[in-house]
Length: 248
Image: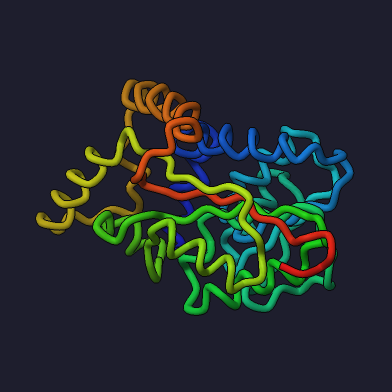
């Protein structure tokens, strides 16, 4: 992402509806893994620290971050969210089988070789360990945020599952989420694209009242998406494992 985009995210991620509700979803998925709080956890693509904030709140003491951008690392350090190394998801600077849990949320869409990225996740994940992966969904939703975040692609669920399989991981669960706001977001992005409106980030488009409303909608969304399994959504999340045998 551009420096200005990082600056916007750093300012809003603690309270913005998208980050707040998404952390709630990830927290639920993490808690189901029944990990000890001294488990080795890696957050790949920390950006300005939204997942590190979550891991800190959940009480994980052995957490490590990685990002390819020095602006992201600086923001995480200023917030006191833990150690973040500079590195590439396609060439992780960690030993084989080092982590019990890996978060790669909204990361692999940024790289040319998403299979290689997940092969690296597999490599550093301990046998029996879990990786939680999320990506933006549906190419038709391409918009300003994809451009400023330097995305390479958006996914459909079957495409993501194939990349996960080729990366060596086994998917235990996957579903679309942010389905309730799919249509409004699609319309908004068509308007922004057609009018060539330029912003540093879509996260700038917010007010306190709108933030409260969208937080409520998104909270309902993440509580229901896993149950009703909608056939569409703005994002996809997958819970994957490296089998205890060490094979995918």
